[in-house]
Length: 310
Image 1 (cartoon, helix red, strand yellow):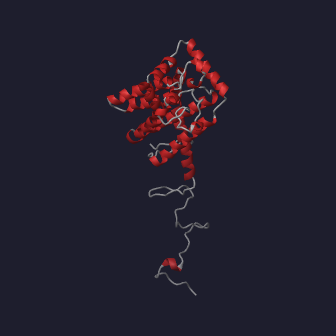
Image 2: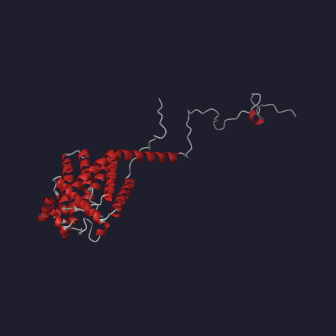
Image 3: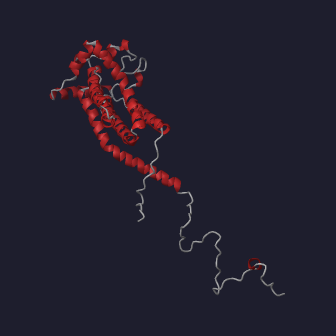
């Protein structure tokens, strides 16, 4: 029985993903995210108020992981310096590496994973816009935090402006602390390794990397514990929305394919049937009249036909 397709539910044909189309897409999305993150700096006073509100909320909940970790990282350079390198680099290296690995080795899971990461990232951008938050390291000194990035800046390429290279502090938004996408992206990387790694080593890394990132962002005084929890929540919402995002993308692609194919002429193959009133090419058209076949012309009759009387 022939299958029929309900109008409006056509799905665009699945095409094999190519790196030369994926790379510009990822760069475009990351560029939009970075530009949006930079443009929505928010008011400094509001950001400080939000940061202090988070500290008060954590005190009410008897949560205080940031202070002891920050004191440890400041007191012990052998912990603080590697932690600063971790914060300044792995966020931008591990995530693309996982994407590339999925693209080459787990292609059947890549598109869903990419949609999950992108959706969560844009949700995080909404958080930066609505709730600009001052990180612990930028609060007043009486709050008890030390900026380890500035404290150990002589060991790395960063200055006193978060993880930005020296002289480029103006190119980063230091009040984009809520939610922590350092933690969110690290969680995504860990889940990808756990699900698709297939070895004991990848499962160990899947646990250590997000856990280590959560400790690093608090120990370096770049995020609060509630920031880290918000980053996890954002990834959860992104995971729920990713299938809908993919369906919407497929619908758009289907309509584009339909639009491109609308002007193409149909191909008639052998064995097809014509509809009523449709003529096959070169078919002779019958003339209205008595219903008799028209007399053949001398040309059609052949050489043996008698010549007409004169």
